[in-house]
Every structure is written in structure tokens, then in C-alpha cells.
Image (cartoon, rainbow, N blue to C red; front, side, top):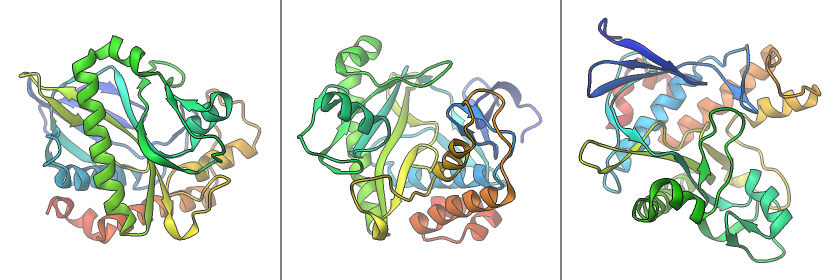
Length: 287
């Protein structure tokens, strides 16, 4: 890390440093959160997986939209990026019915204003992917919102553009992942604007923390799917009867090892690179 970088903020996973007026340094820790609570037990190498996968996708989606990435640092978990004015919405695309989308559908037959066909079940593939924005909650959970609420936050022109870009990015990455035996069920993207007002893809992109990745050979609609994300940790925490308030439970060694293995497997399946090779030379994901 640059000696002149100044710590400016901490997120659930990332530490943010200011390099200068135009650049930030994002350092992805190995912290893991469930139900919006950071747990006391880290997952080794999780930050490197998130950083490496984000870099991999940033390099492969430049034709669709510019992104904030300037460089990956040698530690494999630090990203030098452009400063942006971030939009106040999460840009979520769903290709399958899972998570809060499934809960909304059961209650209303719709998700974020998208009326869906009757008779869908948990994990059903949707007729076409849908854009379902959410608020960025400072505390507690993000909340799904409809088009009107999102337009009120960002304006109609910006909303239409991030909807178009998000759906296009989902199509590109889901097709890429499917060829490698991985289903991209849904994903959350974040955009900001640069000094000229251009939309720029930022934060992280298509990682196990921001996306639901399922093994295609095990997919069967009608229930929850095995996944390459922190669902393993969520399931363990749920089994304890924990009230989902701070402090979270410590994780046993087998849960830590199983979670790390899922993150690394996702990295290697999607990039077709060795994770050890990435750790030795992070820029390999940009090539």
C-alpha cells in the first residue's frame, strides 16, 4: 500500500483509502457477513477471490461499460480505482427466482413491479431476466423498490441507462459462466459517475458475495440450490437459532474450510485459472 494513502472508510468487507483526489485504494479483507452482521471468524483468502474475480470481469466487460479499475496490487486483495460519485441504488438483475425475489413472488406474484407468470417455484428460471433495483440501506437490509421509486432517486434517464447496462452485463456474464458449468442466478451491480457525468461500473462485479452462482449439473427447480457463496455459512448460523443481531457466532473450522473451498472453486471454474497462480501474479486475471 502506498505510504501516502489515507484511510477514509470501512465497509463490511473492504477498507477504503484515499491515494489522491482522483484515486482510491480498496482493500478486500477476509471478513464475512451474514444477515448484515460481520462475523468474528474470517474466511482465509476470501478477499483475494473477490478482488481477482472482479478484476477478471472488469477486464472482460470493458466493451459494455467503462469501470473504475486502474490496477491490481501485488497482494491480490488491493484494487487501485477511480473516484466516482456513486448512485444511491443497487442494480440487481435476476434470471432465476431466489432469495427476496422468491419471497416477493410468493406474496404478490410480482418482483419490484414485474408481474411474473403464475406457477413458478423456487429457483425457477424466469422467462427473461428482470432488473430489480434496491435501496442502499445504511443500517439493516437493502429494500427492493420498483421503477418509480428508483427513478425518484436517480432520474429517468440514468435509471433507463443502468437498467440497460445491467441487463446487458448479466447476459454477457451468464452466458460466459454457463459454458463453464455455472449458473448466474442473480447479481448485484453498482454504478457511479465520473467527473464528466459518464456512468462507470464500480465496487465489485460478479463475485460470490454479490451474485448467486449455482453448479449447473446440480440445478433442479423447486427448492434452494447448492451454491458457490456464503450460503454454507448462512445455513450454519441459521441452525444455531442465532437472532441475527451483533455479535455473530464464531465459525468452526469445518465451516471455514468448506466456505473457503466454495469461494476458490467459483474463482477457478469461472476464470479457468489456478487460484495459486493468481495469488503469485494477480495481473493474470486481466490478460
